[in-house]
Image (cartoon, rainbow over all chains, first blue to last red; front, side):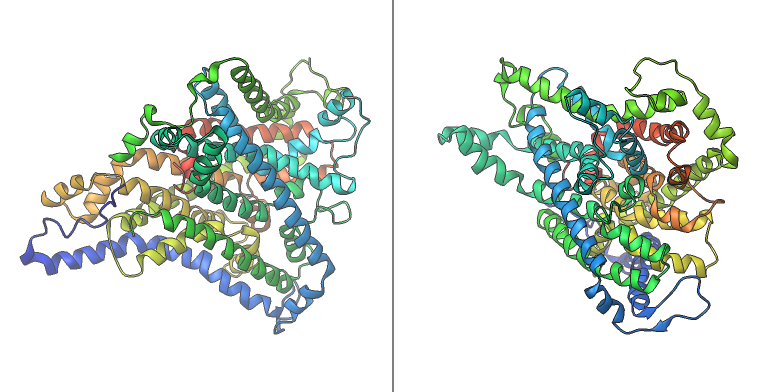
Length: 311
Length: 293
């Protein structure tokens, strides 16, 4: 694609008036961008600075004593906090499992749907539906389906010859059940991104590959896969960041149990801040989380930047 | 424009014309059908549970044939221990609508600024705005809670409206920026020659041309505000509490009121399904910030 011109003011601009026009132009730029900028300054940048400030204090909610400066002791405490370490580990497990399965399934399914067979487009459009459903409702319905006594998942399981399983209260199974729920909601999205990326691949590349005598698997590994790399990275980063922040499923289905097996980092942060009311400590966790997310978002930005046509 | 050319069906790659041949085609149908069924099944469970009687909800084995009743909907809306879902529903509608309106207005303005004006630091500003998309609410909830508390705005509509506006701005700005720069620049140049001011061009010429983009981003913003749980949970009690706050109360119902909560869940999800379907063409573009079209 040729780079689109971002500025039409250099063109057809009457020279004698240019001073006046330049002023009008600067005022227009300012008027257009300032309001959004102000909102983000107040509700994104400021809270980050404020979180840093809070994290350096003993700051208990609903206590008469004022917050007391604590230096880095909240961070120090985090370092030795086994529960924090556990929550980071659980989050990591959750992200790797959920996003990993979603990527693999979504990738494979994109190829299944990438055909002109009649009716496939309709099926594909129906799979869209989970993507935007309220996460709390997703948690509610899967909580119901995973129920040990009357859940439909258990019914299927028993039909297949198993015995009833306490999916959400038994050790490792609880986390896997939440992973399965996340996979249900997000595999279609991953699939659709890959599908769109496949559709955008130009045919001539394949013609060239065939002329060069590449076999089917060679075409896949040397042509398709490299061309899909940007899409793979983009969807991977989006999913990882969103999986890291998600706490609705845990809230609805397990509340972090059994014995901390599903206590993901956001859930530990939330309970520290708003059940134990230890805001300073929660803010320290928030700052670490933000640092991690910033790294991930920078990777995303790089991806997008490299494909940007306009500066 | 080149975009139109690339979308031409004949250029699409990876489509095997021989795919219809047995057994590959049949296999494709089978896998696609199973996956679609898997995607749709939980919706069936939500709606049918909302329509079941209490005995049917707790039945083992699960009941497939039952006489639907609207009792659960009635309970959730009008009875239910003084905790009617109606006010939550109204709050959700108000807060999503107003925050979407604000995000789209402010976002469209900024998007146009980014698409058509050059100024110092523009690139950095644009990518900083993009990075706010990744801000996890849970990492912001402590400072935001204290800010809202100090402003005396706990349990108020305006606090959630502002927060959701900020939450959706990056989405609106990035998607619409893409749409604006796809407009042939000559149209705006012609308007400039005709004596329109820059802001008039934005309002009267450019904005109407990106209507599909506006509609898509508005729908996405509205859904994100509608679904948001954490800020609503922490910042509201009753006066401004939204549907997710209502649903969060399930934990206090001792796992008994399945029908009522599924009824509210149905009401929370149905509008989203309609909008998702309306959105389909722009969904991927929207959710990947225009990175994949």
